[in-house]
Amino acid sequence: MKAMKLTGIRQMEMMEVPNPAILNDSDVLIRMKILGVCGSDIHYYVSGKIGSQVVRYPFTVGHEGAGLVEAVGKGVTIVSPGDRIAIEPAMPCWECDQCLAGRPHTCRKLRFLGCPGQAEGSLSEFIVMPETSCFKIPDTMSYDQAAISEPLAIGVYAVKQSIPMEGARVGILGFGPIGMSVLLPALAKGAKDIFVTDKIDERLRIAEKCGATLTANPDKEDVVEKISREVPDLLDVVFECCGQQDAMDNAVDLLKPGGKLMIIGIPEFDHWTLPVDKSRHKELCIQHVRRQNEAVQPALDMMARGDISVDAMVTHRFSFRDTKEAFDLVAGYKDGVMKAMIDFE
Image 1 (cartoon, helix red, strand yellow):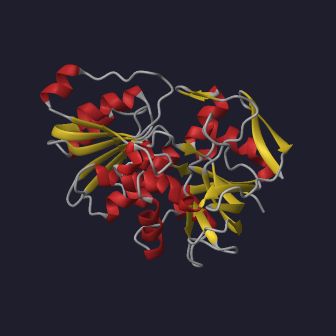
Image 2 (cartoon, one colour):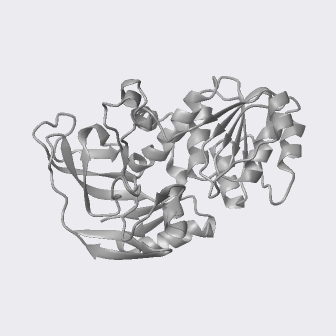
Image 3 (cartoon, rainbow, N blue to C red):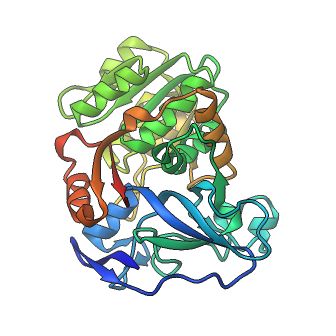
C-alpha cells in the first residue's frame, strides 16, 4: 500500500509499504477514506517533535480519520466488514491503574496514531485498529463529519470538564479547529455569551457565523479591554486553545475571581508563565485537557441529532498525493484555512 511519511523537517514522501495485517482477535482492518490535518501533525512536520515525543524518520503522522471496515478479527463484535466508521486514535491497554480508574486517555501504556514511539499514523491507504477504537456511523453522516468527531470530542470533553454551561460567559482564545470544537458544544449546552479571539480575521468571521457573541483580534486591538467593556464582571471560564503565552496572559486578565482556566492548546515552548499576584488573588482554578475521555460517541451523537454542525470547519480539501501541499497550507495559516481534509479516493 501507499503511505505518506515524514522524511525530515517540512519534508514528506509517498512510499510503498507492506499492507497491515490482522494479528489479534480484536483487530479491525480499515480502508482510509478521509483524514483531517491536525495542529499536532503540523508540530511534527515543522519541528520534528512535541515536547519529549521526537520523530524518527521516516514516520507516518495523521490521526483524525474515518474509513470503511475491510476485515475483522474473529473476536470482533462491534463492527463488521462494510461498516462506515469514525476512528478513535487512542489505543489504551485497559489494564493499568489509569484505565481501571476510568482514565484511559492517560493510560500508562497508551498508544496513539501518529505519535512517535507509539504507533504509525493514518496517512496511509489501510490501517489496523482495535475494535474499541472503531465507531460505526449512520448512513446520513459524511466521512468528513466522522473524522471531525476526533477534534470535536476534545471540545465536548473540555466543556464537560469545565463548568456547567447554562448561562455561562465563556472565552475561547484561539479559534482553530479546537476552538471551534469548544464553541459548538458550549453553545449546545446553553452558554449565554461566548467571546472569541484569534489573529486570523477569516477565522473570526467563521466564529461569528457559528454563534460567537463577540470576536476580537489581539494583533489589532486590546482584546481584554474590548471584552471586559462588554462584561465588566469578567468571564466564568476561558479555554486556551492556541498554545500561546499572550493568550494565557489574556486568559488570566479575562477571568473573574473564582473563574476556571482550561488549557487545551499545545505550545511549542516548554514552560508556561502565570502572573502569581493576579492568579492567586483571583483564586483561579487551572485545569489541563488531555485529548478526550469517552467523548467520541457523544460527539457523533450530537452531530447525528443535529445539535451541532461542523460543516463550517472544513475549508480546504486535497488529494492523498497532495498531502504536502495541505501541510504547507496549514503550517503557514494560509488562505484562511480552518481544517484541511485529505481525500484518499
